[in-house]
Image (cartoon, rainbow, N blue to C red; front, side, top):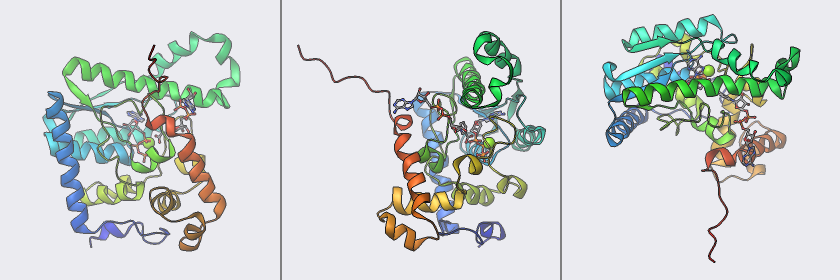
Length: 285
Ligand SMILES: Nc1ncnc2c1ncn2[C@@H]1O[C@H](COP(=O)(O)OP(=O)(O)OC[C@H]2O[C@@H]([n+]3cccc(C(=O)O)c3)[C@H](O)[C@@H]2O)[C@@H](O)[C@H]1O
Ligand SMILES: Nc1ncnc2c1ncn2[C@@H]1O[C@H](COP(=O)(O)OP(=O)(O)OP(=O)(O)O)[C@@H](O)[C@H]1O
Ligand SMILES: [Mg+2]
């Protein structure tokens, strides 16, 4: 076992870590998936947003492995609510991987959007929900527009960075960071994302960074969801993905029934984000 693969040991209530052999298989599986997705689309490469977070960092590493550095284009898209450290990390990752990248300040685009709705966004209303989330989602969706501009202009596919923990809880913006052509790491729980990132050689400071959507200053995934990722992943694996009842999951993990209810609620109320938009059944006249 490598030194990096024990990072999660102290707090994980359920050990979801993969063995070194499984990590090697997962890496190869994802790399093949990216290559096939690009080939099947007849595309010349891929584009993805680089946030300095671990999901986009791992996805970028695997994309370079699949396609070569020349075929990957990164977009670093700062706004007023992004930490400067994260944006400089994103640029550092692009430079280390030797990929083409652009830095696009999305704040002027956001400002233009907001000024189109003066009545809705006056004063402090953007600082509290529901407008805080609505405004955050606008920034996320602006990034998706820019991703697709590059994809269209350069015959690339858009790589998503969603992981299984986010997908099952709906912790993403519908048609924002969810608006992509594929999710290479979509079958990995968050703690497995960190582990695979360490396995492929991502720097420790990025592997252990606190996950944040950066939709507003100080936002963290775990605070907003009300659960830490290790607990969330364990409940997803045993109860939502797995066969254990709520009572058995409480016994197996150091969690409460209320925590499990919270996860099940996130899963059920986000079903619409994992499906194509529905239409009524066809009319047979
Ligand atoms: N049952 C239903 N059937 C069909 N559609 C339904 C629906 N319920 C809501 N909707 C629609 O969905 C909308 C709400 O979904 P959405 O617009 O996504 O908005 P919402 O889920 O409210 O917000 C996005 C969440 O994802 C988090 N996020 C976003 C981006 C990145 C990350 C990250 O981890 O980096 C996290 C963010 O912090 C926030 O908690 C509603 O306004 C409505 O249009
Ligand atoms: N400022 C940004 N510039 C470019 N892309 C961004 C930016 N913010 C978010 N993204 C894109 O949206 C994705 C979703 O964000 P998310 O926070 O879930 O992932 P992450 O930042 O890579 O990892 P973590 O969840 O650990 O913070 C990112 O992976 C990235 O592709
Ligand atoms: Mg992030």
